[in-house]
Image 1 (cartoon, rainbow, N blue to C red):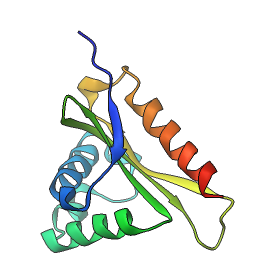
Image 2: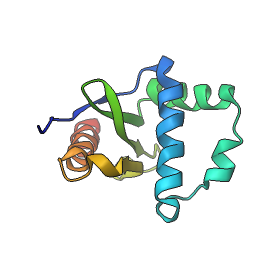
Image 3: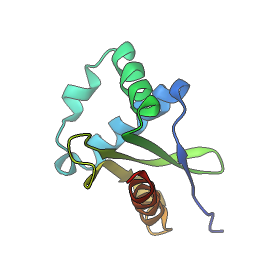
Length: 120
């Protein structure tokens, strides 16, 4: 049975889910990210919480969660630099290996593009 992923913005209180997905992403695809698993594992919980809260509360950030039946399967983070409102960046995009090929990555990308376009 194929399930359709749900893409939504992280809630501030979901920092543990964000942390866990970020660490899974770094372990699975270490060459795809600027940070390393060792660097990120050493962050205190307060920093994870603060990082997600600032993203959720910012007009210029869009931290996204991909889920299937309530289970987290991926993430992406869109950002518009306030110094250049014509450019949006995509960070931290990752989908769990067992959920690839069902459209979650494409859906994450489409949500970031729609958000960035509407933000202009």
